[in-house]
Image 1 (cartoon, rainbow, N blue to C red):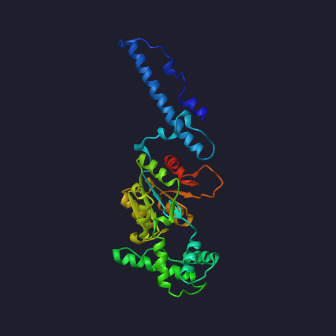
Image 2 (image 1 turned 180 degrees about the horizontal axis):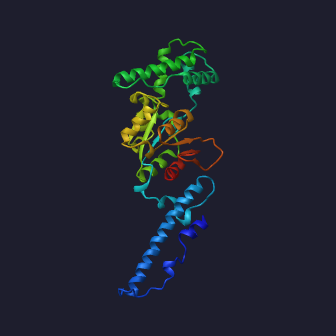
Image 3 (image 1 turned 30 degrees about the vertical axis):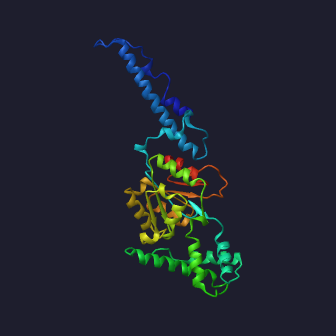
Amino acid sequence: MSRFLRHRSSASPAWLRERPRLSGAGVPARRLRVRALSRVIQDSAYALNACAQVYANLSYSGAGTGTPCGFPLRNSYNQSTQMIRAAFFDAAGTLFEPREPVGLTYARLARDFGLDAPEDAVAAGFRRAFAAAPGLAFGPGRGHDELRGLEREWWRRRVGETFAPIGAFPDFDVFFDALFAHFADPGHWVADLEAAPTLQRLKNDGIKLGVISNFDYRLYRILDGLELTRYFDSITISSEAGYAKPRREVFQAALKRAGLSAHRAMHIGDSEHLDFAPARAVGMAAVLIDREARQSRPSIAARSARICSLASVPEVAQVF
């Protein structure tokens, strides 16, 4: 980078080494000096901006540390030329997570309603049922009341499949009603500690924010309760879009609401299959969050990145 900077902003380019003098038209030397100073300022500004962009490419590939030329990376970018104009987030697992493991909640409530179910067996049953399930979407054109019933029935089937190998409830419907209400309560979810600061920073940068989620209508209440709704310009859930991730249509629906093309947007999620791969396929910049990753700095290749914290999202957005 030092060689690059010396080449682009040499302290004594040819035009600066020439002594100001009267031109053939009689231009005063003082005016020539002013012109020369103006060109110095312009060249310096160019060099600083170039430095920032070189640093961005080096830093996020693991080759750089600190800030470029002593200036914060963020201040070297102009919003009018920033490529990323919208950032979409997955919901559960990305912005927030259950306050306790799902298997533990299922097993604890099952005991309250007459079925002694081991937590490990319940957790394994839930994973199998969820992995084999169709997406939580029922095609476009459904009405509000119909969708609410379909969403609830979708979950009723998943819960039934979870407990089928374990045992029977005295009254499964009463148990399911309690379980469904439990996960509608925002108090049973916890927001990622970096969620609010990250979203606020992106908004301050002029980036539109949205959610793209395979959750059901309970998501609206959860986001409200976690005080995250206020950050978002749009919330797209699979049932209302008619398609569930990884279908490209749900991403396209969110982009249409934002009024942007895919190359001006990024999507952040915790699933390679449901978030990262389909976002890339539709043309968006894609960010996979893996909180268990050992590397502390983002890993960036072209228009994709892998991060271990939501706090990295604003800087990644600038590099894209």
